[in-house]
Image 1: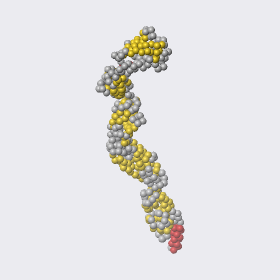
Image 2 (image 1 turned 180 degrees about the vertical axis):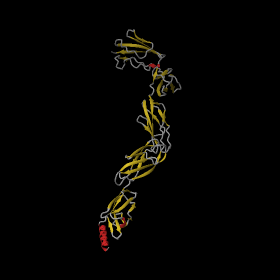
Image 3 (image 1 turned 90 degrees about the vertical axis):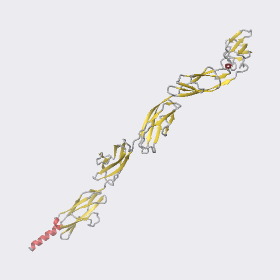
Length: 430
C-alpha cells in the first residue's frame, strides 16, 4: 500500500510540474464588455482559484474566476496575466502576459447645410477615430430608427420636408465593427417665394419695381436687385431708369437671415424715347404784328403744350419759351422746348451790303436786307446805268446775287411795307 501512495505522489508532482494555464478573450470595443475565459491542462478539480491581472501592473487582484467579464475604461492594448492556485497551495501562471485589445469607438459628429423647406440639405460627417477607419455611415434623417441611407460616403443628401423641428441621427461603424452614434436637432426653415412686377419701361423715365415676395419672417431680409443693365439696388421696391432701349432680364434675390433664399426673374422691355422734333413756318423770331406756327414733326398719341393746347401745331404771336410733351403708343414721352424771340419792326429799312461778289464764298454773295422777316412784303427793283430794269421782285427774300449780269455799277429802289422808299447804289464785282 505505501508503495502505491508513493507512486501516486510522484505522478501528481510530475503532473503539476508540467501544468499550463492560458485564456481566451474577445477583442471588444470601448464601452463594451470584454469576456475572458481561463483554461488549464489540469482538471478543474485540482484548481481552487483563478486570479487575474487585467491592467498589467503585475498584481493578480483585478478579478477572480475562470470566466470574468470586465469593462475597460479606455481603448488600448492591455497586457493581461492569469494565475491559478492549486489544491496543494501551489500556483501556476502565464509565463508571458497576453495582449487584449480594446478598440476605439468613433467620436461621431456631423454638420448639415441648407436646411430650407423643399431644398436638398447636405449632411457632412465630422467624426474622429483614434485608430482604424470608419467603413460605414448610417444616416437617419428623422430619427425614426430606419436609416434612409447606409453607405461608405461621409456625405449624404436629403430633400427637406415641411418647415419644422427634426432630429437627425448618424451612426458610424469602424473596420473593427465598433459603432457609436450622435443626434442633432435641426430646424427646417420656410422657403421664401421671390416675386415682383415691373411697370412698362421707357428710356428716360423711371420703371417701378414692386416686390411681391412672400417671406415667413421679415426680420433682417436682404433684397438684391439686378436690373440687367449693370446696375443694382437693395431697396424693397426700387425705381430704376434705363438709359437705352432693349430687352433686359431683371432679377430679384431674396435672402432671409436663415439664408433660405429664392430668386425671381422678369424680362423688362424698355422702349426707346420717341423720335420727335419741332418745325417752324419761319424763323424763330416774331416781329411786331407777326404770327409763327410751331409744329411737332411726327405722329403721336397725345400732345400737351405749355400754353395748354393739345394739338399737333400751335400759332404764337408773342415771344417766350414754349414746350410740348408728346406721348407715343408705348406710353413713352419726350419733352421738346423752344424759345421764340419777339422784336419790334425797325423804323427804317437797313441794307447790310452794297457790294456783291457772287462767287459762293459765303461773303457778299447776295444783296441782303437786315431783318427782312420783319416785313410782310419787300418790292425790290434793280436798274443799270441806262435806267433799264435788270431785276425785279414784288416779294424779295434776300436771294438776288446778280450772277447773270456783268460787273459794274447799278442802282436800286426798295419799298418794304409802309416804310419810306429806299434808293441806293450796288457795285457788282466778279
